[in-house]
Image 1 (tube, rainbow, N blue to C red):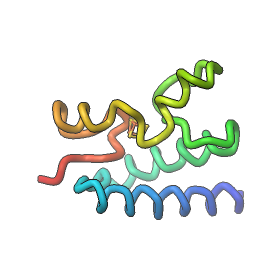
Image 2: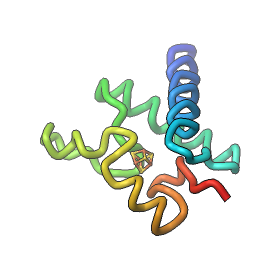
Image 3: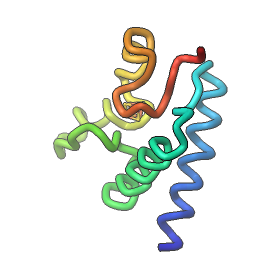
Image 4: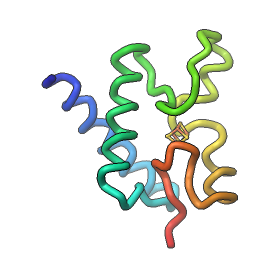
Length: 93
Ligand code: SF4
């Protein structure tokens, strides 16, 4: 679907910009990266917000605000595990 791919491109542009700004890198495995970008685009289509594709959207707006990408957890996760839960952002090696 055209709209979906455009959204996905937008997600890619945004995540790349954010990664550069924050000093992270995107998942170097292109296929895995595509998968997460696909997920993000689907979230935007379904919910109108960039909710984390690998966390559960509860429907409680205040709770769900925490998982708008980049979620409130990603910095700690990257520091601890080297990447965020979805394996979108990685610590630069
Ligand atoms: S886990 Fe990663 S992809 Fe998911 S919202 Fe957090 S930063 Fe974004």
